[in-house]
Amino acid sequence: MPRVIVMGEVEDLARWEKGFRSHGDLFRKMGISKMEYTTSGSNQITVCADTTDLDAYMKVFQSPATVEAMAVDGVKRETVKSFVLDKEFKV
Image (cartoon, rainbow, N blue to C red; front, top):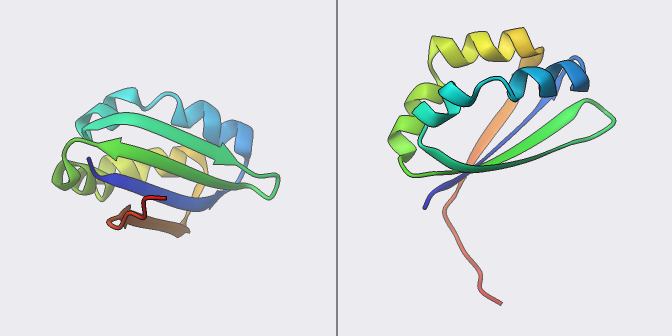
């Protein structure tokens, strides 16, 4: 199952988290089956998502609906970086 990590900076952590938690419908369209996230005191966020459909994930991630949701949540779009994990190291 593909795993995607998204990192970025937000204007306000509380505002972002409240908005982030309201986007369940958008996340379901991305084929997300599991999400984990963390925040830091310097207004940075990291989200890790497992998706059943990487193509759907990327299509929705780049859609106007996602751009709008990020703007409403106070995400500084120019700081957003995304990574698809494609390597594994078993210990």
